[in-house]
Image (cartoon, rainbow, N blue to C red):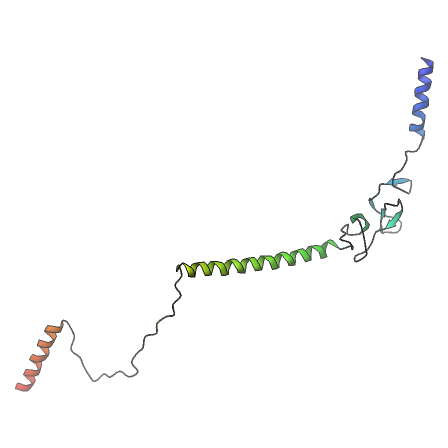
Length: 162
């Protein structure tokens, strides 16, 4: 029993008093994992633990990069890019695509409507009006062609008799 207790104490002693190995970068008695970004309070700039297990300063925009954690913006596309610039580029692309799509839909719908004669495209007819209206001639009201001729003839006969 004594020997078992001594063996347990000897096995636990390095874990209690020993240092846990760091597989990343040692920074101010802390262990940063590879790919971890950290704000350095002393200098005021961001640092990261590289794959070579070295503490390095985070890169500014337009600097070459391999991983996202190397950039201040945490966005790497072979070059560090700020997230706002990346979003603006995507927004412009989406706007152009949506406008092209909208215009093509409108043109195709107009073509279909014209083809199936749902919309009839005909120019409006212009009515020709007389340029000069004579008010001195009075035409008798037209009710019916036969009665009109008879009325007209009767009036003419009355004029002749007088």
